[in-house]
Image (cartoon, rainbow, N blue to C red; front, side):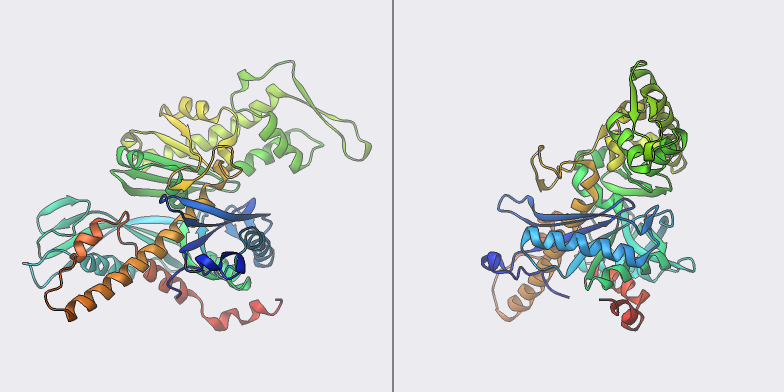
Length: 464
């Protein structure tokens, strides 16, 4: 694998050829979006370009038609390459769908030398060992996220590095998905002659660019309302505690509008929802009526705004109630000091913030992408619908930086061992200066690679 996710290969950017950049690829139900970016001199991540194409091969977050999905990816990537003037060969991909689940599993390792401090390598071994746990047939591990650590009798450790002890253990949030659905994503990416740098559950990616550290520490539920699914990620004490997928999203609201008001097509129903819709019926103007031209000379369809709001409210209430039920069933509801943050395309629905507060009794805000990223509020990307794509881009950059830092650390250790008397920082001291903890990127990539080999892909390139 390349040390850096990509290299800028066109003449325009030759002077920064070795910059750490990455592409986030959001394969959604309604759209496929790609973002490419790099970290600037101020430490923020800057968007270099993006592309978007309508998604026709995905239903409720799952790839159904590989050919149509690959075509959408190819178009989005081509737009991104042209706008950023780069060649793209690797992408960080998001995954959603009802097939995704999480399980709490305990793991531990015993160390030989109790007089030495817990190291980053010990943590890596513990986390990597969790990829050996048995999962249900037809399932594949997507991510493994540790909760608090325990060293011997010392419990509740957020970071065990530097603690003396023999036994290191933790409870892990093991996130799994259906193997066939994961294979379909891999096939689509490979058909576009791209390498997959990682696979991330979409609400985790969205959280990178929507939530700040204080919210994660206090307790918050990120709710990403997409076209096909509503994805949930719960953070308490700075740690991801729970993920869930509700198999309905904004498209169901659009379909309801189309079904109730006869004589309109889906595009018109979507326009009605976005431009004229609200999920609080009593805010509508009783005398306000929207006229939609009839098809092929048929009479126009007259739609009262109050009736439109009632249709939207009925389905929106169902979605919000299912969110609340999921949080309560996972014993998370009472731990959300910062309530709920709504993001995704569905978060643009008028009055959804107030309606969610009314149904759940929790504080609610709309989550725009603004964390870790250099973005203006008047930017076309400053919108909840782009949170996942931007979050995937950020994770791709951070992964490249982390792997580069680890390699430098190993090189320094090798060099310092050859130079007597040379003073260097201990690995643990350098680790404490990093923003992020160890994530098992390479193990995730190995697990995904084990699902499918090159022979399985031969027929996928015949059309290209």
